[in-house]
Length: 565
Image (cartoon, rainbow, N blue to C red; front, side, top):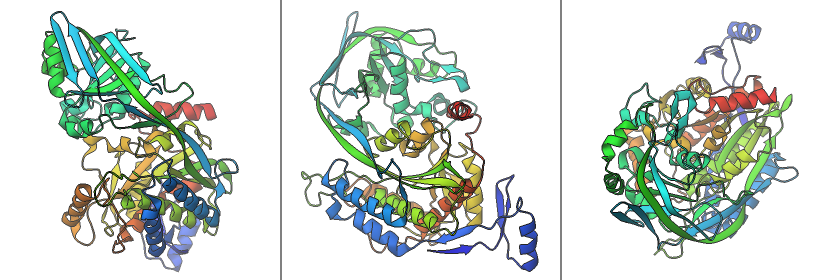
């Protein structure tokens, strides 16, 4: 690995800005005298040949789509452990590179009906067409019977926004009906939550978790295409398919017994049976004055399951810091994909070349870059390849809940998922724009590269909450997800958007996501350099970036850091 010193970047550290200068002897001397205002930045040269090799191998048919708990996993783990060992990383879980992740597959029988009853009312909502239902509890069967139905608006308890949709009503044993997304999106009011941009409170995963905290017996979210960002067909396609989760000590009995979705039309029918107009009640729910509304109806449903437990593995390697080894920066990438489906005609293997053999390759080569530095960073750097991302971010959730390093001393995480294989870009797209002080770091690193930072184009879709960094955010660790944007240096925005659209339509989560030797990985190395610049700066500072004041994760981080001190 070769490292070229940036010719002296005058880093305005207090403002997070930087400019590149052509140095002469005088400039260099002046910069050396004022270390607070100047920094020499190492810029690694990554081997595109090695990146091609990693992706080609990991996405080969031999690895069978890298599904957890399959022979494809065994081959993937062996490859990653070999790479980490040769690079010189220490095992990250005691004397092992592997961290076991207990998984369970829960497949609900499709022969179920959600029955809503009241005075003169008996509505039967059919599976797939009107509703979907499941349980994350590790049990052969679960049910709710004659459970009182309550409309709880957006199902949000957000003290930082002065919002509590459950205020004044105990929903223990009740079935709650919840709106998708959050009030900011519904009103498009930039002063309400974060306006059009989805917060964590808008994610369906949060809504089920909050319903469980409130003691609900059933939780059904009303599907609407625009606020959900996908049509009902996406929800219906998962009906009756295996759902994966972690196996907790209580066998997930802290979860709501029955979770699910109902269609917009079904919700309108249920509200009408309660003597209410759905759209009117939905409008009321967008106000902080909203109070939960008992519908005077009951819900009943029985769920039968087929269970299969297994153990998968995260892969953890560490480069120990020279001065503060207990403080860490964590790189994450998921190694898993969708495996194979022998029922398909033709190609049966989901090779997952872009998603996420590419991110895994980047993780390996970033580890090599840091390991080959002439001097080790002051803080430790963890390289974490997680399992079961495709099953619901499970490997990263297990690590965040069972970290091998101190959470309060975890400085930041940087996530890599589906690298740019189309060439260099003029922009850096930040998913989770300005969520934390890490925004300042990415702005500075992008400026060093003569790139600009831009917000993701669809913040209302909540993509920040759909990749592995999110599980670290949930436990308070500032987490960055940034990647090359769509303004390609060769072809501009039109070419970039066309490439992204083509991938989404023809290869994403399809067997066609295969390695292509013609890929231009210069954009991938450009993004890797960006991550290197950010992590290297963090690894040699003594600061701990925090979330912005309005963030839903700020209080968690503050409490975590207070406990450390």
